[in-house]
Image 1 (cartoon, rainbow, N blue to C red):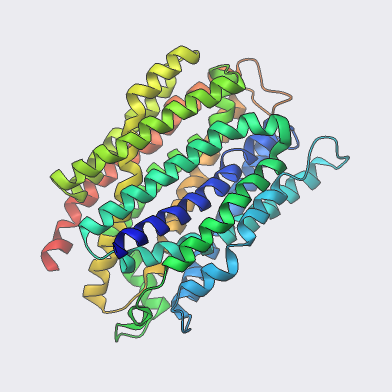
Image 2 (cartoon, helix red, strand yellow):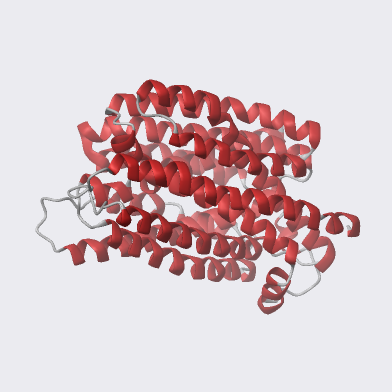
Length: 432
């Protein structure tokens, strides 16, 4: 019963983070570029590239600082406690500007850049430290599979709520009002999470080997299997991240959806994805998390490619119902795979450095997102899309190509690398 309560608390906290964070990730880009037309696509891309690079460096810094933290609450909990109130505030500040304000494009660009960096830094602190607690809170594959399934079920629900309700709510109370509502939900759920994160803090300092940042860098970047794994995840997660960023413009131009149709489509997508988590959980129990990881990463590009098919609301409903269950494995398996890598590292090197490994993995992910974002911007520019005021001659085709061709190719790279990692990591299993 105690473990079930911990799973619930952990999942509720991730629900809260996802609900508020998704309001930034899924709508801020289209808000500045398309809805309010405050900055051009090229400026938005430049902003995204800069803050991703800055955030990648900060990931490593925050991971290092977390490892060096000494307190009665362990390494991770102090960081979570003192940073979580600022998360919804950053999202709120993202939407305080609009086209009625008499500022230059340069000012809007600088503001979007700075608020993005601030948001990503707070997000990094929370996700790295909460994620670093996962392998300590949940010890074996059964516990981790159950916790990961439940966590991602609530994350999917949070994304579904955000993407379904936000287009409708913002028409009546604008994005600031939406952020206030989501923030009211966020605060108590995060307090529930914090109350459940109590564990044996001596585990944070259990291993005798002294933590060395230099040695951690060496062990991470000179381990071929670790690099291959993180690159595989980076390509897949980059394609998923860009999909959520592009969705409002894909729905507007390519599918020509009305706000209520967009909400219905997202509702169907996330219900199907949510139900698929239970199927993927059974698959993991049947064939193990390693084979499930490869299966998920290989099949996910098929789901993205299906975005090139629909032209209207009915067709998109059909495609989403058929292909969206392929998303489930991409959500569940990374928790299990990263925990496996951390277990290998602890046994081999006798040191606890979950946050550092997670931050270095995130750094690789940021690099891949930067490259993918640049490709997206180049393709958009080639087809004439500048911003919402100047979308080009055929924006429907532009976003069909980006969503249904470019993103599947990015994800396919991750799928191929997942097969490579599966073969390379067999040695780690034999050695352990």
